[in-house]
Image 1 (spheres, rainbow over the protein chains, first blue to last red):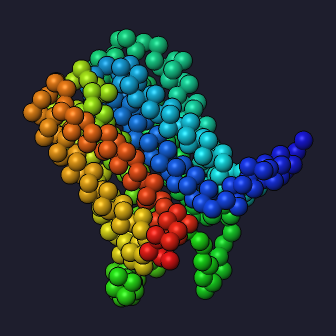
Image 2 (image 1 turned 120 degrees about the vertical axis):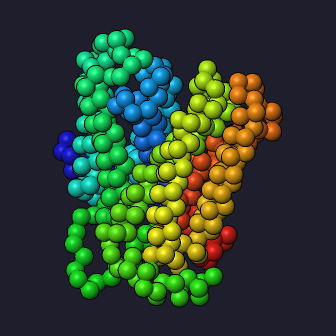
Image 3 (image 1 turned 180 degrees about the horizontal axis):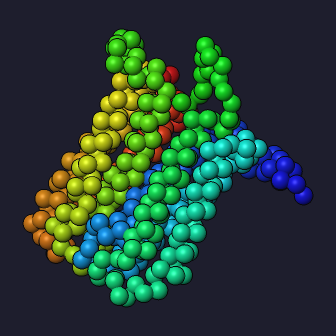
Length: 179
Length: 166
């Protein structure tokens, strides 16, 4: 089964058709996706600032993680569901879109960074839980913040291209609904 | 309102903004990222007031942690929001979502200040029922702001006959 045929079946599915034809399904789903992305960034920022040693220095890092991670996961799950719903409507266009590809890469990078931190860097967390994190942890926090901000910004960038990468000829005005 | 918006659209500052594509994109992107900071901070303050988050810390300490971020992000959002409105006043002023968002933002700011006043009077004790209702409303309000912001682009589809664009 080729990527093309998978994308075609996603795009022609009943769910995709419902998303495209039901007013205002796409608009509500997209707005909810924005809210979820904003919440992911807002909650990740709290843990990352502590990891970078820039805020909450008197609060244990593990405690902050326990407090904010459920919110981050809830927002992230909502973002995945709404993002997947949006993807179904124009699977081919999204898949070929440079901003979408970069966003997927940034998401993957954020996941790898988180896994690296959980498996290796956080092993000695007991030693710095209430103090200044070591350089590796501070770098992990900074990279996480950069990648999640990139995810949100690239998501916005997909909106600028409306799922299509093409150059608009000079002098031609295109009216996109919803811009 | 529409004639005023159309006049505003022709003014030099508006033309400078809406004819500079990279500036519009920069403004929108900055507005979106700072929304994460503002909504996150606003929700954390309201959650603490309810005792659902950092209940072991005095409210004043949580306020000191999140209020500067809330104020700074709201300042950036106000500046980028005004610039976006100036750049495309017809789109903004004719959207019901825009006016609901502005009203809600004002309510969220006033509600947060009220909540802070109530919580400072009883730093570790349970807040009065009215203050807890305000805190719950604030959480919903802060979360509704990004939704409404995105819905400005889809005003007619979302609001139907209630949209100022119809």
